[in-house]
Length: 210
Length: 424
Image (cartoon, rainbow over all chains, first blue to last red):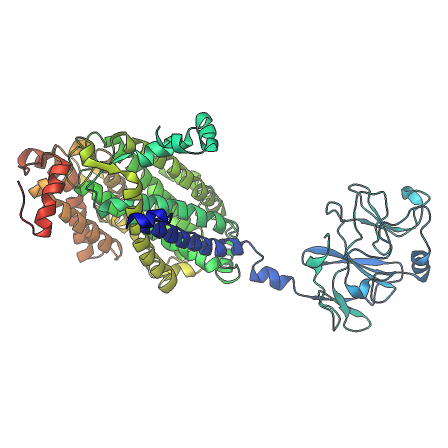
């Protein structure tokens, strides 16, 4: 080591310390990787999150069933023609926050006024976009929810209201429409939740708010 | 302190209120360490590293483990098969127990060879023995958690040691297990304690270090530092030496983790626990084998008026084998620390090392015929060494003359080692 080396601002020892420390940091990072990764869903958990087939032939018009997919409640509702008609009418008393489903809360194939593939069959992730409670199914107009209630979902936790397409009303705590999961029709009576129709690659984790 | 003054304003602001930087400077930079420490002095910091590693891997395993008799075994298999990198974390932890004991046993025998337990380091030594006991308890309870055959029957055998206690023995065993035999309540409390004890170990390690830093490290010559010429700062000299040793150690450890992860374990523990069938041979993990050998070797002991039954005697001797370590600083009457200057003790030290290996060998075999005799001889020598030999040797042995100081001995050795002529 000459004085010239010092003038350059670094000695051989500085270099060795830096190189050894950098290797140490890389090594520590490499060790940390598996530990962090171990906290991600394990293979069995992922396997349990595989698509599920649901027979919807027994759901009468106006009825809803709830199934579990990836540990989340999935609402599957068979809407009546009257209910569908109400959804198309312009909301008067209670305006919707996002009536045209502009926010990314559904796959492209559900970005329509009925937020579904077939108009009558509604498929939603039944988790309020406010703080994660499960909204109640209140399809009947009026009643406890007031004269302006047209039927929809009412979250008991903080009073968020959604219509029968899962669209959130303005003036409630929830910021976004209920998410629509990826699903496809295997046949007329069986839907597969967790799988997109051919040509789509929607991922539920890509929505703005689950 | 000197160093913090050179630091930034923020460091000085913090240090004025919370003197962690002064503390680190005092305990690392300024901490005077004998200049002649050999690689045998690496094992203390290695043990500390293993403790941290075991806690870190254990915390991550605990996130995936299910402490229930019906699910424990399957949850461990799930860690091995389904959890991302679960096999790696478990193998680090599982082999970590073995390597923690390897490191600790070398550390202990280092202390025995160089007399590190002698005044003024008696409490330092005793705290170390407490750590050893806590480690054994932690390792034993951890071994129960996978709920394999060895887990179950090891737990059965070890908890039944307490039934040797007169009159209340059986009640104590029932109380320890929270049931009439090893079962779910025992598994749950073992899990709880297996998580707790390592943090107690951390606490005792802190005390161990405080006691160490009070008088500083012993050294291969076993003589006190007499001035600045005898010592060098811990940092960077021993931090770098410790790190280098750790690198070598990690290569060996990693070789086990990646290439022979089950070499140190018992395959019977991959059979789910079966309370209706004892495996043909029950053996503890290798690091407890010498103590297990002592437990099984002892016959009925006749005293003048009454008999200690073999079971009780075995339990007493097993605990006694650790117990003698507590009073070792007073059993060894020689004022000379290092075996380098104790020509007779040096040989007996190596005999004790061989004895430990013999007992370990005996512990791994069924107590029949030759093994019984060997076990009894080994046990007898173990206690003879500590209780009779060490007190007598201090009086009978004539130690070699001690060097005047560490620096004198070190500097004299340099020309001799390089073959140069000594300049007087």
